[in-house]
Image (cartoon, rainbow, N blue to C red; front, side, top):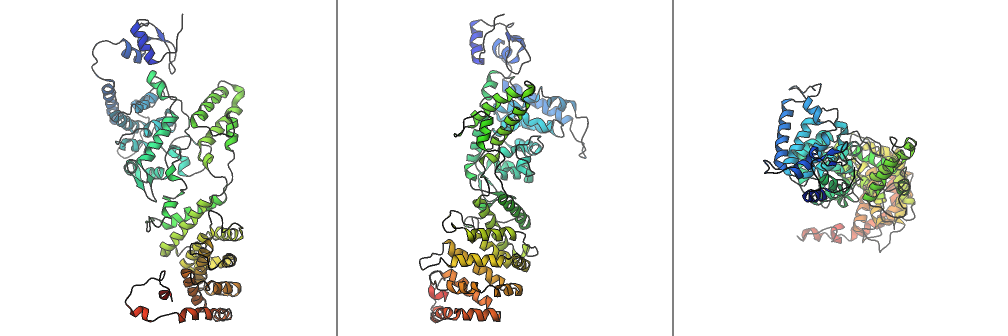
Length: 590
């Protein structure tokens, strides 16, 4: 018999109108088990051959059927009133979760009809609860289809996502235990959104999903939602046109490349907070932290992970080579996906028994390009380390009473950071300097607890501070500004010495470091650096409680520096009734 085609659905309509086709014409399309007469194919029978006036539209018919299915599922719940799981699974739910029917049910989501989407999402919750098929439901594409919906009636969608996102049996190239690697949504949604869904439930997630948020806990907007939908639509671009021509087509699952959001550039998510926003004290000066101890533990873990981070096991160029793509150019997601599909079909073990090794390499390469590793910085990222250090300073400063009973466990990394930064030849010229932030964290930690002061002394942290202090004091000049790295470091380290002077064991260690007193006195030369001088005088006052340290200060000439400020004092300033500020009024400082 003569074969013709392939034809699109629109072309078949035109051929039908010409009278070339009839009800006995054999037809085949992808997803069908063989050739069938046109009269046996529902899409063609009802759309081409049917005559007369329709009783219902396709949407009305779908709504009626979904209502029936939802009602039947409610009649046969998956659990008893006490919450016990019922086995065997009710027959209606077994049938609907079968691979013959579930994909077509899920693909109704691509109609984007508000009523149909809501009813399908509700039905999926009923069908998939306690269903053994739950771990593989992701292969139907349901998570892609459901997140592409643009309407606002998203509560049933949120309920389905909450029920299913952590139960999918798919793991990427990365292995680990964090929520982004366990959740099927980790490739699509920002980490804060996945955490909100898991920790706060579907109602709160739906509220966030529809809103505009820019806080340390959530960054999400309609623009980010639009960006996500565009990326998913691009990923499905090969399938959605086919579905219009052949409603029996079944989606072949393919992992989506990790979606990056421009709004989250340079952000680091830890515990339940975006650290860049949390450290922005101008916009969020006193943002409440629910559990300071838990956040400190997570931040220390993130710091350790960042410091120990090694380059990925595979490079982008190696992945391109495995997929047969050109090097030295950035390929778009569509091209990568097509190359993967071509090679996966060619070397699939079911079709090519000798191709298993190549098939696994192709899979690994594609999974790598889809993962966050392809976008990550090789080795430690100084920006992330800076955020981690600043976050700890905020915790110790704001939650001193809460953290006081605990000994700080981060001194080995902190002291190593101070030493490496102090020895760096590019200290005063590099884009991201960690030394000032590290010195500030040291101050806040020892000011928080006596335990920390003793731990710093035991870890030889005071000596490390002295090395950094000497390096920065040596570059101070009359042209130095308060915003310079050297000035900030000197200010913060002087605060550290002030706090350490409260503890006898630390004072004994300071006696073994005579050079820091000379450096301290040297900072008092620079009267224009008001804050540095103020902190220096406070440090002198704190050290003077020890007789030997007091004598060392006198021998270094500290008295003459202090007398200059004393003689500049004007007692009439307080009596004048004029408001003053230490930053703008030299007399107020004196």
